[in-house]
Length: 185
Image (cartoon, rainbow, N blue to C red; front, side, top):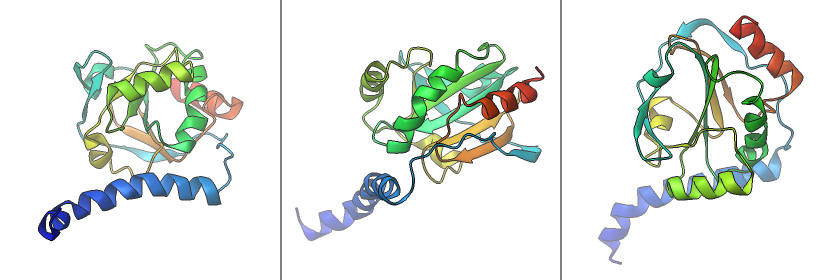
């Protein structure tokens, strides 16, 4: 590789290294306890940038598909230790509310795409969650996610009403009760 080629690929290498190193550093120096309190709600709903991602069959999906119901949109990756800790609780939460009221939309931002996410779902027995991917990480940029996992709570009109950066125990009593209040139960 010539120096000119290295200079051209250096920014990409730095970003890729950051995506590998940041989760490892966070995992090493911060406790692994998952948040068990309800996501903080915004004072006023905020517009969400339009995003597109793919379902498990490779079809393009947008958030319009979920219009009319609340959405818990989770950006995650298979290599992310906090994601590994929280994904089973998202799977358990999916059994607590009908998908017609609360759709849980976990979007893998793995560059490896659908294959890596499928293997992960099988390994961790994530059988209640739909499989969505965005290997381009475009959704992360458009939603201004500063890290993963990042979870947005959207209202029935597709507006952001809450955001959590970091992992949570989504099936904890406080979060389930808080979501039930938001849904009007």
